[in-house]
Image 1 (cartoon, one colour):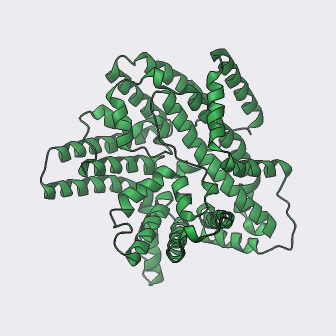
Image 2 (tube, one colour):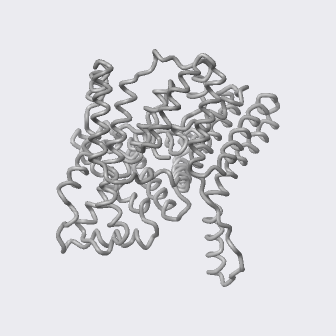
Length: 470
């Protein structure tokens, strides 16, 4: 079930009415949302609802187990069991084929070819997101930063809540569970903010991302060697816009949908392409993942407190893990290592030349350098194989042919997708305020007109969100 579909619209209307109708019966309200979330997830493959339930129940029981003991050794053992349970689920479904096939290739290179039949393992949608939420809950309870929930329903809803279930943002238990302690307040809902986020997300996904993908990015990455250097560069710029508009659209719609149901999610994007350094970029891009990696991997490894060399090693390990999180393929590993290298180099330079000593005009150079570094690294992210990635790099060097893929329509979409990053935040706030001041009838008419125009402008069919595969 995809957000920009009639099916989801009908589903959400039923959930919206039902959840608010049950508001005075708080327990029934939560179980209704749990049932709706499991139905939403089961629309992809009902068999994996059992996996979702297993992850939720095991984390609930593990949290209660931690709460019942004060012995440091036992708590560490329980933590290890919880991490192995969550990591084992993610590792088997996502990385079994990758690691086994990689091991077989190494053995084949050594002259040994064992007769091993690989299992056909289907990757459950959203598994990277809900297992990370389970890990964060378990670790926070272990660290005593969060009290273990006494309510199984709260944990079931936290891990399965349908707006963010499939592609995030990765919502922390410390953010979501306190909101379940009392019924949502209809007077606290910022309806104009929610609707403008949803409408903006629909435009970014169904118009900008879909058209750029089908008319520019997909044809190029299917056969990069068929295109000239200018076409290759334009397609790589288009890919940067597509992946941003696609993923940030999902986050915006998820945040808006949750808001309409009475729950607050954190922002996941903050105009990342206006960053003038890689460090700033990762504070603006997929914020829920970058902060998760920081809090649950980088800091436990020692962060930047264990010396310079250890800091560089920690950065590499974090982005190696981040690359693997995105996909079980060596291209994602390379993407992570490229970013790890860039951050290490950047950190080394900044130690030698603090930012306060840089002229103001270096911001523009930093912005352009950061954007192009991210674009180059994303070649590995998008390419299905190293061979395709190498073809992309070779195509970038072929400038004897003219630019042919830059149709006026696609150029406008790419420019708009990049221009979004430089809109002053107060403009968005002003638009939300203006929409909120409109009479309800006018809001309804504006929303109806928007949906009509969207159905006219959007291409036929809705492509799955890019991050569904993670």
